[in-house]
Image 1: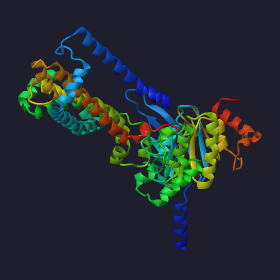
Image 2 (image 1 turned 90 degrees about the horizontal axis):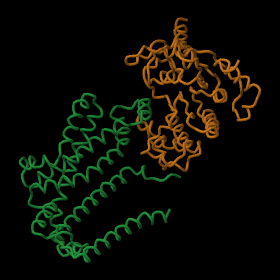
Image 3 (image 1 turned 90 degrees about the vertical axis):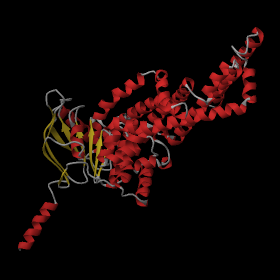
Image 4 (image 1 turned 30 degrees about the vertical axis):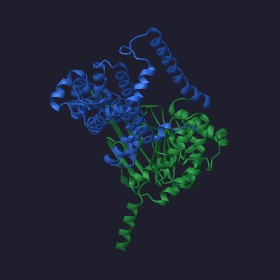
Length: 269
Length: 254
């Protein structure tokens, strides 16, 4: 009986509130000379494993700061930031990050760029190379493994960056406006690609965007952030089934969600 | 593409030929003495006839230049790494570097000669002094110009400072290093010649002086041409190493 209880307790410990648990996260910047700046004010939400969440908000609202805190590139001033039940105190090996810029190294070939995370963590080998090739063919770049980034278009570079973010099989994929620098058509192409890859890898995704339609098209949940200091205005459950196809953008349910997000942001009434 | 490349190599050749023809025509028509201005054919003839002497005098100048340049690379790059990565060293050393650079090298040359003697040492030192600055400045600038995004990426992967330096900062700085090296190698030739002018027993610079004092205009001009050729060859050699070491910056877009 007692043993059962102890077991029960330890199980409760192993299964935390959510895969991602964020409670009263605050961030204050102390610039040189200037007044302290409150960037994020008390944000709390939970993220279940395997879910796709978008952080939606106006430019400069602190959503990127929040993502950087989750990524461990920056620390919160106060509050709880947990992934998989562990406090995030620095970058984690099972995170993958894609930034607004593709950030490829011009001196590395496409394949070597994709393998960079493996090389840094020294857990490479044949398997990793095979996986890199597999990811590259998944994004339609199998013929470019030995090309240099300067030989690729902007959209192709972002596809390489996506492969690099996924090559070490991260449990959590963090994306900071990854398609923000792309034209509209390439952007829509990349969104479908991301959905496809996410369905195959089953990674949990946190994406920062200021595009309402992108947030709704991609996500299970859209967290609507306010202007600085960022507070959570709304948490929209996107009850549209996956796999999603571009046609869904014209569905009434889709527009209704867009409308709700717009209202949350104070753009529409 | 092909016609463009042909044009790119044809026009400089045509330009050169026109200048040589004008030069040749002027010297033969005006009857100017070869001591003041020898004709291109005079210079070419001397270059062939005194081939042994010219080649013999090229070696010391080549050694002075290459060794001075090599020393500048060996000392300049590590120094640039220190300056780029340490605020204290940057503040402490940078003004001194700029100050030493503003001293005219011709003016230091006699002092260097007193320190290092008539042999190769003084020329090497002068070549080093002029080549050093562009290498340090460009390498430091390259290291500081590492894209923030790449540093963020490396940090997010928990790369160690050494990994960040070797795998991100250094390759990112390489094109800058070579930009500095290309300037430095041409300056190193000038440094070596300054050294030979101030006091020497050998070298192409020395030959220019002695030929001039013996009123042998064509030989002086031939030595001058050989010096220029030496500079061009050394520059091309550095450019070739650059091409080999940074293949990504020369690949064409698909």
